[in-house]
Image (tube, rainbow, N blue to C red; front, side, top):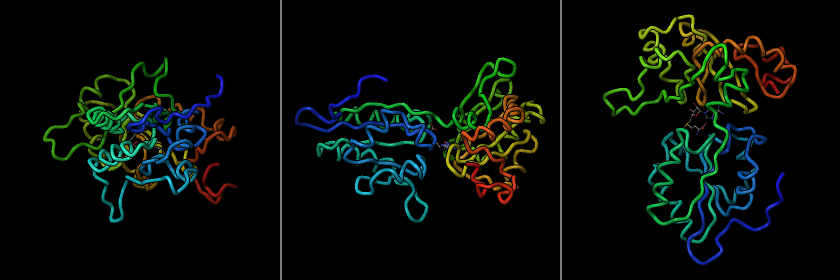
Length: 285
Ligand SMILES: C[S@@+](CC[C@H](N)C(=O)[O-])C[C@H]1O[C@@H](n2cnc3c(N)ncnc32)[C@H](O)[C@@H]1O
């Protein structure tokens, strides 16, 4: 490891403080980067939503946490509020961490916040994180690429803007590509895009998997095929946050899951496994 840094990242002159757009990784505190952990410790305020997960959020003192995720009543904090708050805190001279699940620039609105901060003249830095799009499948035993099965991978959103008349995701093209398809925010719309992919010619027996709350103590995995995955979702009661993986790589899990369980390095329980049958109460830990 490199020499320990002793100087604080806070401003060295009068003027606004710095905003750090930080990725928390998928939820396991051990997957926070060293830099993310240091910045969280040193920040005056940490603006977060729920996606970093309970284990990471519980480590941040309440006094410096501000939740800008879902509000009581189920509504989301408007993005404009978060943008405004980042600028306000920085202008008060604070060092601010904007903590986001996974990587801040992968379906995380980090790009919008960076543009807003640049427009407002606020110094900021982007601190990449381990994205759930790769880590989620990985801890479930699914490599997103594999020399024998997939030489490309596409990361897409399943949750489209309802005001758009046309899908921004070209499911037909994805079906034709033949690589791995990783869908984020794709639990609710699973029936629609599974159907689109089948209609576009993707074989119904293409392996598929859902990885729910990847790396959290409550992580679950459910597997099936393009044809069965909606029923699998419903039977297991899979809910967001979850990653959908579609492609031959999803079948790799079957061959390695026994070893993952033995190693105990990650909770890998199948969603339909009987919690009472394990010593850990079903957390897979
Ligand atoms: C708004 S996107 C944010 C993605 C995030 N920036 C990342 O790089 O992982 C939210 C979606 O990410 C996925 N996600 C994030 N964390 C997850 C986790 N620990 N397990 C499963 N899916 C996760 C889910 O698909 C969720 O609906």
